[in-house]
Length: 215
Image 1 (cartoon, helix red, strand yellow):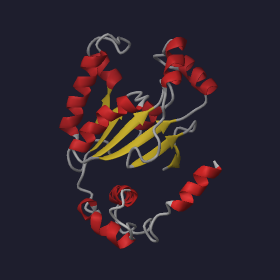
Image 2: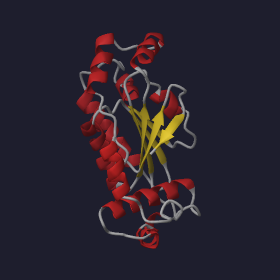
Image 3: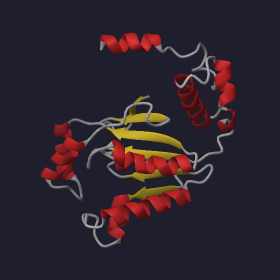
């Protein structure tokens, strides 16, 4: 922890960077700030004025928005995602499985994923907000969605559902479609939550079902 604190002291942002985009809409401001921080980390900009100039193309907000949910089954991510306002398309891999016959059928996961990614590519259009609902437990799973988002120049938000194991087990028992305990245990074992900076912004969804922290 002490090493991390020292490292953070060494990589302070340029003065005024956090407030350089307050005149923009929230989505455009989030995108420009994220791109500015990336450019600063890469050494392409050194001042807030340079950051504003480097991010001019995103100031209009004319880009797609992708909210990628991440978390084990029963963690509340779908409830959160379906409650977001202004969503143009909601892509759920469970819904795609259900359309094939059963949401519990994992036998055609590859085909379901390819269908979902194809649909994502089609609906990520300028100004549209799209939610991707899947467990997205590890970097590889998330990277396939990110590749489509990059191709469409989308603002990417990770919405990470983060609750305790005991609460997760209790919720699973109350779900309309509970998963077997061994499947849930496997998901928890494989869950590698995304770090801040792996998307333009990160929301942490707590037990309240709301955004309790941001990065």
